[in-house]
Length: 286
Image (cartoon, rainbow, N blue to C red; front, top):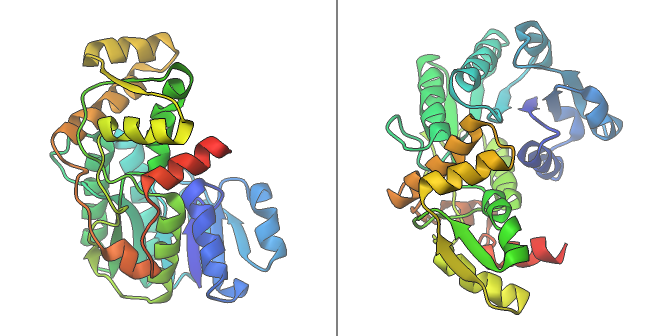
């Protein structure tokens, strides 16, 4: 039995779909906050159980019988994030999970400028301390984040963001497929994987050129001072912690924390991962 948490989210749902192409549905279970959102999976034979990171008793039931557990990282930061992961890891150990896999991030480190990468590093420490087999999927930075940063630029023609550095933007579909492969080929990686990244690391100067090709019109790249960017985010309703989190992405990128490009993802999925240009073209066509 392979149990996947967060199976109604972007990465979790895609991973379940790729798993169902490789193993029978009765070998797949999902742990979700709202089972109604996974009703179609239940109809296909997937075991659907409620599991909330804030309710350890529910996790014990959701993880029951797990041979492998895929822990999809929470969309939280700081202590709230790490505590939620700790609850899930403790529940997985109590449920007797043979291997715990966790969606970490390329660049995970205790000294990262990006809060999420520090949270990933702490979660990896928790996994290491269990003494059980574990795998940290060092996923490349999700391309969906870059696409969100480009939403305003699509209207204005100006990519007005803080100074950045190269980032190996990576698509959810490719990462989900690789995750399914790793789950099926149990034990392929022990501890952190190599970076699972797209084919190139790009800064927003390069992205501006791609945006111009896709849109068929010029795009400029304006460097916005960090304090001005933070003020703009606050003015648009972002809470201060979120504004600071967004700003820290650019600080980490300038430090080169997301610049690594590695062939492991391509080897896992048997083809070149989607380039950012293709992901941008698809997103803007939709």
